[in-house]
Amino acid sequence: MMNRQGRPSQPEKNAPNKGIQTSTGNYGLDIEEPLSYELGNIHTSGVDLPSCGEFESSLGGLERNSDIGIAGLSEPEVLRHYTRLSRKNYAIDMGLYPLGSCTMKHNPRLNEKMARLAGFADIHPLQPQSTVQGALQVMDTLSHWLKELTGMPAVSMSPKAGAHGELCGLMAIRAAHEAAGNPREYVLVPESAHGTNPATATLCGYKVKTIPAEADGRVHAALLKEYLDENCAAIMLTNPNTCGLFEREIIEIADAVHEVGALFYCDGANFNAIMGRVRPGDLGIDAMHLNLHKTFSTPHGGGGPGSGPVVFSERVAPYMPVPLLENDADLALVEGMDVPNSIGRLTAFHGQMGMFTRALTYMLSHGADGLKQASDDAVLSANYIMASLQDVMSVSFEGPCMHEVLFDDRFLKDRGVSTLDFAKAMIDEGFHPMTMYFPLVVHGAMLIEPTESESKASLDQFITSLRSLAEATKQDDVTRFTGAPHFAPLQRLDETAAARSPILKWTPKAE
Ligand SMILES: Cc1ncc(COP(=O)(O)O)c(C=O)c1O
Image 1 (cartoon, rainbow, N blue to C red):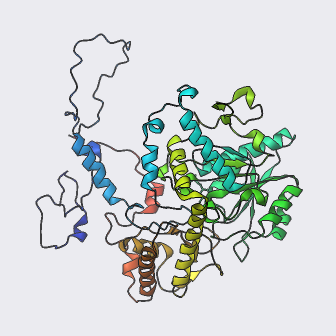
Image 2: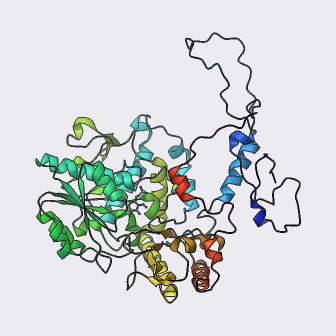
Image 3: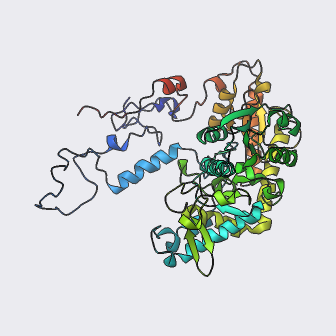
């Protein structure tokens, strides 16, 4: 059966009544969406432009001599194409999005309203600074809040994501060591770390030494000391860590690291669990990134634009990237000779203005007590899920968790269902799966982060689904899992083929 674009219509399995054949081959909204190139037609145009008439080319023979090959579509056709695609996607605006370590929290609409104000949205980074004092004020106020919340004396607003913030922090740490005469050789990274930590250390020219996981999922100062010597440049430690646990020995760890002259990079991706309760500056940290899209509710945005400001201790602050925002009579962005030890620019211009406005809106609309409440609620939600499911799923580490709860696959043992099968079955339940197989320190990890956004009713609905799935894994017939998802537009992809022989180029059909 073909759909209206002449492509095979695959969702017959979802047809509400297989006896009915529609004229288009589609069943309701279950349409396989072609590419816009296939949908449109290169011989038509969606806009009416006046003819440019005769003109003399000034391109010196470099002008295009063939069709550009972009399909023409009318405005409604374009809108409908993207709206149809969006309906195939799962989004935080559709339901609970439990991806652990990702913090998929609600993006308040007030943030969007503020970010769209013309004074923020329509300015240009090359405008004279005297004409954008309001925008600089937003950056300055946000910087102030970030420093207050973390208890750190300096902040760089340039980085465009958490991983970019890590690079920024470690480059500054390297510069601090170089200024002292020796960049040192390696960076310590716990086994449970996010992959961006070792990648960052490698990118900065360091060897990575891995600290093995301890039975309670935390790093212990005694074991750490066995890995530490004067060649250590830094430790990169996430707190709360990727198992959803607070690193209880963090102060002893900071002391041990500083004793050998190394510096402490804290991966602050999980700051959303401790905001308002713990100030990293009180723990001996030298640099830490904050993912505005995780803690401060800015959109994740499909890979960008993100924002990952980095806070610094006095020791590392002189090496921060430029520009720096100075607040004298006027607000001014400074660089060059005014910041002689800086590692330089990390990005064109000054960071992500739209994200700054959204994050500050989130902060101001919550207030200091509200931000603490948001962290407390995130932790409460995760513990509620843990307590509600611990009799049917296997919790990896005993005791209360922070903002995310880690399960492993022990409860699936001998049932013919893997973590992947279980996660895929969640799609049929109407949920996005949790994070799978991360962190690597437990077998078949399932990491769930509900965030503070969810009501108790929404958490209960999620818990009911997971409980019924966990019970169903005990049945003899587990095709509900091994064949899942049964009700999604696409079933399981051949991940091996996708990785080994990907088709990366679109080829137009012969006319
Ligand atoms: C612990 C941790 N570190 C670093 C990152 C990288 O952050 P980003 O995705 O903003 O680059 C993440 C992202 O999820 C994370 O969870």
